[in-house]
Image (cartoon, rainbow, N blue to C red; front, side, top):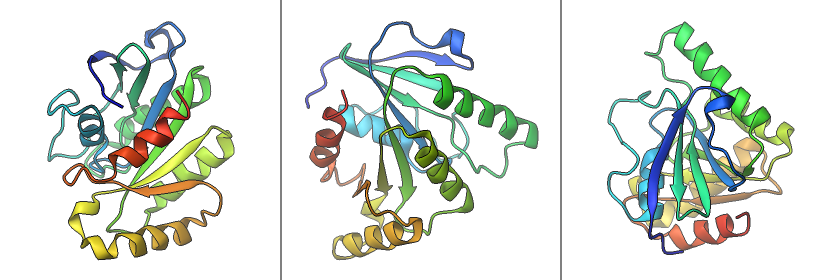
Length: 192
């Protein structure tokens, strides 16, 4: 897919602030600093639409990015950031939960995991939550550029086994190498 007009639309903290209309929403979830913003920038071939940072926990609201008036990328706050106060974690958790329960246009959830590490307890909780939601989803093992190309398939399989994935799609991804983009677009296009 070639994206011609991608723009940041709104940051929201409640349902009344979500964009109106019925464009499908591709929702990104994952722990802080897993690369959700980099994923957006890579997929639309722009450097700075979604703000990236070396400091985890920067996204504290739900960010909606309008892609060619066809769909939204929705970046949910990252979870598991240890420097976030307990109160901030609770508030962030409420935003995520409210959105996933009440967002009427969720077309696909993309759970991003770090390919270099075993899924954390928070990752497993999110995966189980997504399974229970009965919403369509895929799992992306991000940061594949951080390991040897020859090890990517084995690491994807390791994560697949640790989550007990048997029926859903799990794919590698790299914002640096940009070699997996077509596979991901193919999956997304099935839902928009």
